[in-house]
Image (cartoon, rainbow, N blue to C red; front, side, top):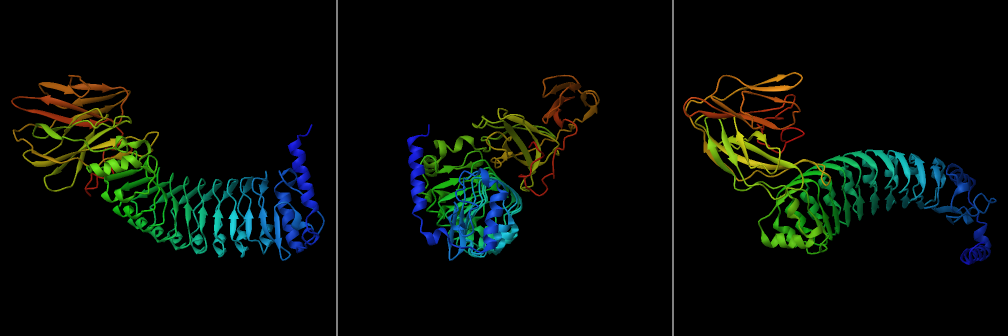
Length: 519
């Protein structure tokens, strides 16, 4: 039995159809436009649409078909969103020369976007989002000079973003999020002076954020999250004084937060978690009073720090969860020199409080005053508080520093490294001790053997023999401390075989590269 509600709806629809003006019901459209509508029906399984009332009716009834709006004897609008459409979008729709509004979103459309859509010179609104469209974004869409809304989000579009979209000077909304787009963000998008919303999130975009985006004076929302963007945050984004939302989370952004972001007085959401951002937070962030309390800010899972108690308290009020500091990979404190040899200096420090996600510490040395840091290895845990820096020259003054690292984990897929700690200095001894050498033998197992005869041996594994066997090597350091005649006691370190230790030797003084896939 049909429900009373359904009967009432059917009756209302029937009465509405009977009351349609006859001149509207039988408006004539050109034959080529009727053929374009029929092509859409046939290519998208029109028989099974949720609503296909009056479709394929007699010539002259086209303007009464469900979702079709006409003006001046031409099809002006097609509104068929959420209509259970399946199949491909036909190129014949480009023959609707007067079409100004095309909404086919939230269906199951597949295939590519017809490049012929670039011929729809009157189009102001194009929404094909929430479908299963694939292929690239046609650069021909850059011809649509009157377009104000381009919504292509939540599809399977791939390839790069066409630079030709920078020609759409009337565009107010550009939604390309949740696709498979790759390549860099075209700097030409900075030409879109009327743009209010730019959503490129959840793609596979790489490269840096173009500083030209800082030219988008009308922009209110910017979503670049969940991509593979790298490099620093352009200070030019501080020009976007109308911006209310800025989403940069889950990228590979590095460097410090520019103080210019403190100019964004209208900002309600600033979301930058899960990157590789480092350095001291600029005090200008305290100007962001429009950030929503308790959820307007997210700085988690970076390498940021501050000693400004007022700024810390302000940011905690805005921060999602109320504590931005607890997940920051910061440098250890109280770094000191525990012992000194001819070729080895032992460093110690206090363990950092952020222990929830795995990581450790990397030690660095530099001839005093040179500032060219060389990595001396890393610990396997954030619980470790000591490590030897070996391979040094006797009677030489060195500076030493320690950085913390956090491995990729569920909340951040990046290897995050802190700034270097406060430096300490020490001069190596000169009592004639030799640096021990370790030989690596690779067979069914891996054997590490100290060359020569020494009085005693103490490996980092706790063993006291000249050789040790490693059954399952990992990317961790193994070292041995040996003693000989007189005051000689030295340490040598090595890694499991087949592992590249240092990528560039840090001759450039750039410690951000680190060693390999592990630190």
